[in-house]
Image (cartoon, rainbow, N blue to C red; front, side, top):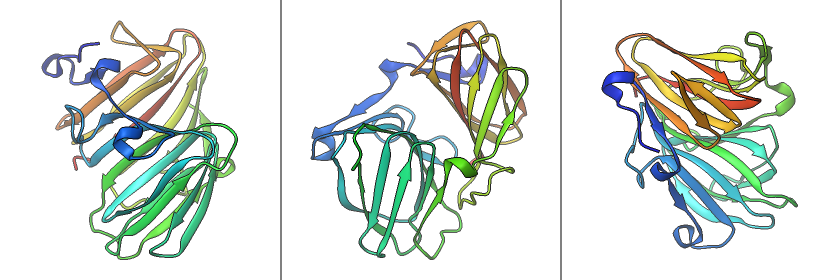
Length: 251
């Protein structure tokens, strides 16, 4: 699926041909897969503060061993399954289940972490990696539990969970201004609105949505590079659908 012309539409549509699938050969161990839409292995290496966006799958009983990170922050949104976190450098552990959001703050000190799926089903995780400015001194792991995540009706047939934003209790250290998960009934619409110097990503998780007369099935992502002008785009469900929306600053 070819990307949209940003000079005309102000956004870029990504389909399967635009992603890079990282697998066991890349990670050095079995049971891991990451579909990269933004990052070092694809055309779009950054978007605002976002350095990496992955759809990740970890098979049951497997994971990735301890390895270092420093200075960035990571959001892990657990769409399915569970995950156990171990940071051997800072003696920090944690557990995430379906619907939870994990916030991994690497800090100036950095972390040496392992993520493992000790459950019985694959863990499916949407991962955002972004810079922190200023860089927090301390390394930390914070969990926003599914039951604690604000939920609200965003118009008829649109039900939204707000993981990051003014309604969410999760406090982050980078310029991610909104991160939501919205379920749409057939025919329901929701806007993706960005202000001055804002951009972001919309990921179609389930079903099909329409944007400016173009149908986007599950697996597609739409990138909105930061713009000096305000924008508003409407996504309409063609059948039941679900989308993730991330709004960022300029980075």
